[in-house]
Length: 281
Length: 193
Ligand code: SF4
Image (tube, rainbow over all chains, first blue to last red; front, side, top):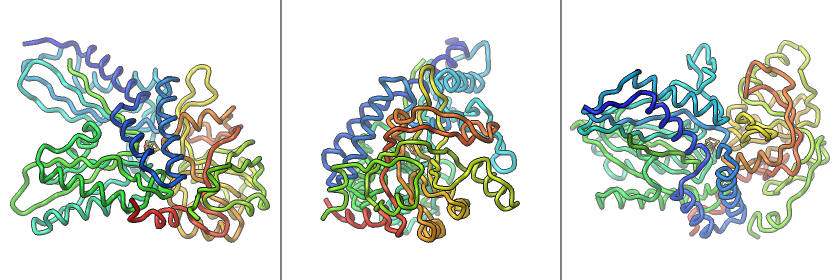
């Protein structure tokens, strides 16, 4: 049994949210630069340049890449040999979020009751936390700060098995097309095919957190990722939605086993401000 | 001619207040640098403004020839005038915007699509819709010199702020004739490589 103090988890969560809020990953910057080089729309090119300048400046100045510093989402893999001491695991994570958003001058964007009160919780908690118990004696955390301009443009559909590949492809492309300029293109598209309704949504979120441009190991899914990206970038939506070739930087498709009667597909859209990171304790 | 080619070369500079004459000189696709005073407002503040108007009461600000920027800034770090301050999605203000335009509002800054009722009001009363780049929040914050809350302090980031700006970068997305770059730009680059 390995003991891990709750306070250590809080500290790691805090550091991670501070880092991702200020620093856009190399993978995303690389994708933005490649998009800029290929962009033929002058306005589109200028917008990509503005975004790259923004991301560079944010890291330099220690300012949030975007004012919507998102809702905190945490995927935790807790080794079954780990004993968490001196505190509660979920509270430790929320405390890390609370400290990062307070000390990092990040915007608090979470309201408690969503329908009647809509009262800001003032500390950006609670986080959305998924916990898996896995073999081993470490805790792995994968986190994302998810902006809602793009979250609001996400969709899920329970397709039938007969809808097949074409059905999945059409639904992905249609979702990005309907979203148009609203999710701050260029976007990163996270997709999960299969599972149950909830599982598909959860893994679609996780797919947005894959390293940009990483491919599904299965060649058939890879082909689907490429086809979806190509069709999305033929939509003309472009950077900022004002026309151009760079509508999406990547499409990441993952899957989960499903029921004989079903073919759920969830499409989680993330803006170019893809903020995600991992830590192992 | 490819849209934007000439306009990207040179930005138009605009000083507030944004009179209807100035609005008439703006065309979808124009790059514009705004200087002067603008106001912030998003969902909650719009709801209150429209409720006041419906009750026939006075607004906390005179909307004539003014610009509202749809933004909920991040808190200002020490030594900065404002935190990151990029645009939020405009469609959520669509329900309120036509009435504000009727009351004299001439400019809106946000990101993303607008509904037909907003565009009709813009055409009827000569107003313009500017797009700021979503997620370019630090670059935009650099053009904001100062901020001051003028109403609804209890709304926190959603309170109405008066901003003094210098060369605030935007693009005319929809002009007062209803020309819409979101539509024409998208069509122009559809199926291009
Ligand atoms: S969608 Fe993303 S880039 Fe756009 S405002 Fe929201 S968090 Fe920022």
